[in-house]
Image 1 (cartoon, chains in turn purple, orange):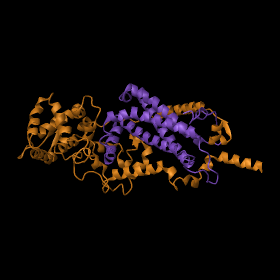
Image 2 (cartoon, chains in turn purple, green):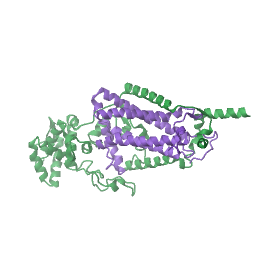
Image 3 (tube, one colour):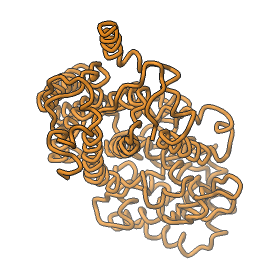
Image 4 (tube, chains in turn cyan, purple):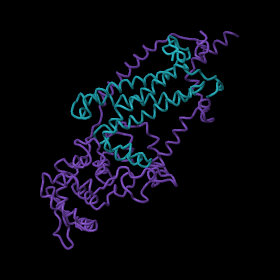
Length: 193
Length: 324
């Protein structure tokens, strides 16, 4: 670990001066939104999935959870676009790019299972409508959108665990390679992979 | 020391940086943003549609659903895998048909699961149901289908009064035990216990797997679809990526949902399979962008990077001018 990512790179006290744009905030704002998702989700889990339907406090925590998710995806998509436009896979950073996509795809499963865990008409409608795509893909028998217990379990345990592991690997790779260097003004420069 | 030299970032001019401080600032900004959005906009929470609501607001719809289930003419009995074994029902693209390959994994016998077994539970507290249930179970499928068909034909002259189906006087051939079963079913729905009775068939109470009760009203032409239409939540209205009340939903699935609105996806019997395969292929291409010439060169072509790193390029030019 120390050989691959020395401490001065893991927690740097300097950064290259070219890191001078608001686009560099998108990644850390996505991480911050995830922290709020986990914090509000933990409160919701503690009081149970029916709490937010009858308690105004529960409803407020559900609203925070909901808007943190919207912010999470908003900044993650901006981060993704920014990294694409900077060709951030250059210099051996392709695993960082692929890992970022895995994070996005697992987050989509998190969003879907979350919507299905709401116990209201939205979850009912998404379940009965979404099942057709799952069944057509051949996975509806074991990833059953109509099975609340399965969706809730995946949402509150499996997805967060996988997200945290993938995020740790993503951040380690970012620190291992450092931030991507600017493209030459004319657009040539270092190889992509 | 040699490590630092080989670290590409070290070759550029540096500025002080505090990662921990930045993380706390981001957490603070996000916390304020989330608190404000939650306080101002809240979240929608339209209760799930229940059989009790249906029996109170559109009892004819529940009668129609139960009769279709009893005669196995309902959408799930002819759905194909994973619920039923209906030849030709599975979606396919030429030889590609994952739905067929995976087979019937969660079989649903609609007559039994959605109607008869819940009524058998209800018979424990309403013994009057035992006789019609016994007559039904002793009849063969042809006889059962004939009874249901006779009731379906008589529905135009029927009324529903106080959650009881009142049919025109039975002619020959008769309705069999179907009217009593339907009335027991309406009463069970009226009590609010229909869904738990359906879901408790294969497991403990309270059930966490609601597959069977959700399949009861699932079809777009049945209660769920009509309710969704009232709430502007149908597929044509992008109902899958928004929440009730026009709140944003899974808007990040816009591309997936868009495909359902355009040919060839929109007019295919295998639209779901088309869409899933297309999204899978597009996603794979995007994941593998670093390895795909042309695609990976787009950023160099659109040149937005010049805007992102404008400060860096300005500094470079200034240094060059100073040197010269």
